[in-house]
Image (cartoon, rainbow, N blue to C red; front, side, top):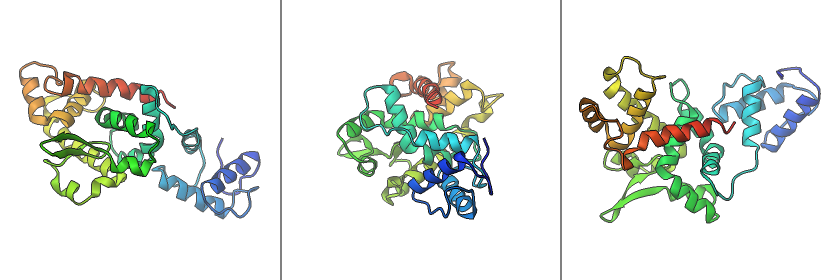
Length: 249
């Protein structure tokens, strides 16, 4: 199904009603007119989709997934990943635009970094904005070292943390990508194939946790890239959760 300017019918009525519920102004629910076109573009841009004003499978699938019942209690890992998809997915999709990363990968990193905090605060009944403010971890010597859903380290990025930018979910998602990109630059010469190669993708994921120098050393010693990561399984766990995330639809 493809909805575009001057389309009409039941599908257009349903789409216009959806846009109205999202807060957009529609002149006539029975036709895909200029008001629908502009509202569609605005919706697509807001959620990191191509803002072409055409309602195809990708836009409809995103709208359907975001329109599902919001997770208010988390009882399983799958529900935790679904909460991340529902609440962080739109930010992740903007951050990964024109990159080789996928939403599931970045969502899984968030789950590995702060899943236990998300679980704690969602089940306490906290609203999203409150949860954002409480995404602080790795408490040691009286201070938190990790901030945001992606646990940006204050020791490595003091300006980012001290500026308060970590409280902006979009900026934090973007920072996660910047950090991963730095790991790509540091490690790509050690692999004949980069993205699409699970060993490379695991290596840069491990480096996100333990640093590229530790990963380089592990590789040089013929050890697994997770040798110095938390619980020695950081990237393995991220890739496992990434696969679950991909199945959420």
